[in-house]
Amino acid sequence: MGLRMSILNDKKLDDGPLVFLVNKITTERCIPSFLFCTIQKHLSPKTPFFSFLLASTSPQGHGSSAKMVKICCIGAGYVGGPTMAVIALKCPSIEVAVVDIAVSRIAAWNSDQLPIYEPGLDDVVKSCRGKNLFFSTDVEKHVAEADIIFVSVNTPTKTRGLGAGKAADLTYWESAARMIADVSKSDKIVVEKSTVPVKTAEAIEKILTHNSKGIKYQILSNPEFLAEGTAIDDLFAPDRVLIGGRETPEGQKAIQALKSVYANWVPEERIICTNLWSAELSKLAANAFLAQRISSVNAMSALCEATGADVAEVSHAVGKDSRIGPKFLNASVGFGGSCFQKDILNLVYICECNGLPEVANYWKQVIKVNDYQKSRFVNRIVSSMFNTVSGKKIAILGFAFKKDTGDTRETPAIDVCKGLLGDKARLSIYDPQVTEDQIQRDLSMNKFDWDHPLHLQPMSPSSVKQVSVEWDAYAAAKGAHGLCILTEWDEFKKLDYRRIYESMPKPAFVFDGRNVVNAAELREIGFVVYAIGKPLDSWLKDMPAVA
Image 1 (cartoon, rainbow, N blue to C red):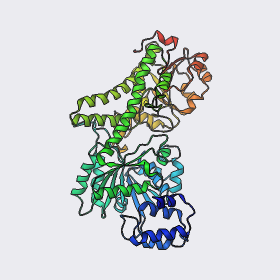
Image 2 (image 1 turned 180 degrees about the vertical axis):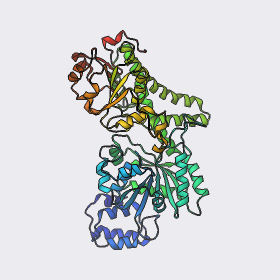
Image 3 (image 1 turned 120 degrees about the horizontal axis):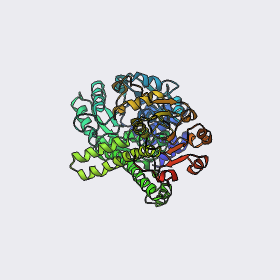
């Protein structure tokens, strides 16, 4: 451990430590991978003993001669792209290839306009791309050459058949596993990066084993715990890296191989090693717990409105308890994103399949409260505006499910907009990161369609005629009877609301689904303001909460 820390920490290694290192380990002709990567990273090829060291030793588990470790990630989405980019940045001695069958997506990763928006991602990708980070549609070539294969494909909720509406659809995972078996010519470590049901590794293992042609595979679970908007920071300094594998000598060796990759920048105490099933379940459990906190505070927000309490004050008081903490206690119009609802539904299905209906019902309630919060918000809008929004223009500020991302998967804005459209409102939508095409697509698709590849989604979604998309908040608000804030973008806190008020018919309404504006200041201007979980405006006190 001491030797390892000196190598990791001492950027000015000279021949002295190298002599000691060589004498210590070259007798075994093998060094741990994390040391190999670190030596390559920090030492100049001109340093004495460098050439000797590389010629005399090799990373553990990678043959008798030194070679660059190759990683391939199947799936160039929100998880695969950023994760592999950071691995490439932190491990310059590892060649990383991100592959996908979607030509347009790979072309975007190779362009100046990346396919996803994430703060800091551009700089990471551009510093490594073409050096040891590559994006390609040649899936089979890179899979065949890789030592470690990450699989980061979609696991959408099934829309038909057994488990429809709850179970995860593993079609894309199975297809990836069969392709790996078909093209592999050397032993592989296959890593689950997608969120998958417990025991998925067992199914994948069977597919690979029965099609192995003498090739050996080790399956690992390495779930991601990224929060969109802070994904790069999360990758640079993760709370933990979780690696699950078989409790066999081969399984433990595979765990150590993957651990050595992360050890290039993640402190060892933050790398947690478990069995396969614990790692798979931990991801579902983590998302369920986070979603539960949001539904808990949102349930309290309804009670706060009914009693005159302020949910922000209640959350602050509750969060001061060190056993609870302050995170994920902000009331809102509801949670969104690709994981929370999908993973809880998956958890519910697993509980039901294992004869645990009471546990399943407990987690179902988290989703029920989330749906209730969205419908409650729509009902509040309609009832406040004289019980109808038919023909009225409603401005929607924010469409992404949270700030600092362009991701609209399961965004509460979809259900709120559809609820208002169902009452024949006209919508004018502005979001700084979401395109008009994406908004129209989201409002046209059926539930869960978003989680399938683009070529399996509706090719030309019909435009919703009552919806216009603006590229300016003031244009969206002009002439609107009401203003709905559905994403907590910082710019919405800084808008000139007096200017907006003057451009709207009176009475002018603001419905703040993220508690981003100062309600008292807006009331001074003249707005009727509804804010989630806050004491009600006098205008609203006499209005029914349900239309």
